[in-house]
Length: 193
Image (cartoon, rainbow, N blue to C red; front, side, top):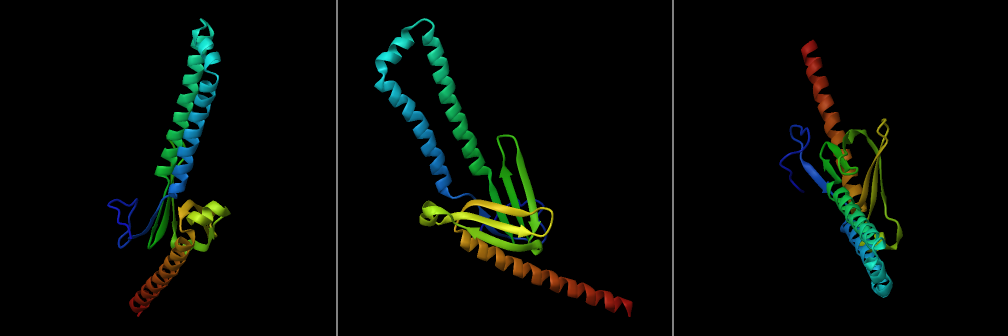
């Protein structure tokens, strides 16, 4: 169980049960894409080095080649940076009372939403393909009856375990709320007498 010093709108007696991020394989795909998109053009340039050398020595093609190459490599760097930022800042926090979904969408857009565990109606774990099966990661969907629809935990580690833990926490929260409601009813009846 991970403890956070600051939980958004933390309630009295609320504690963090799960702190989730995407699986490390998501970072590996970002790194591999960055390496491939960098190495392939460099390899092609090395293979055709005589042609590239003549372009670079040309008065008009030289600066254009340098500018286009710089734009290409800066675009790859920016893409990798944005993808890593999205990976790192997407978090899901499951407490004993609610689920908090924090998603980074681009560089300057972040969405945070929360859902009370008592509103959860269904949880589904999904593992697709050989890679996700081998590395034991996948998606968990948390369905509610309300307008929020469903929460989606993307590419998290051990989705079956997370689903079981969320289901257990939902049961415990529903019992807690029904016991709390029964106590309040008992207090109201004793005041009426």
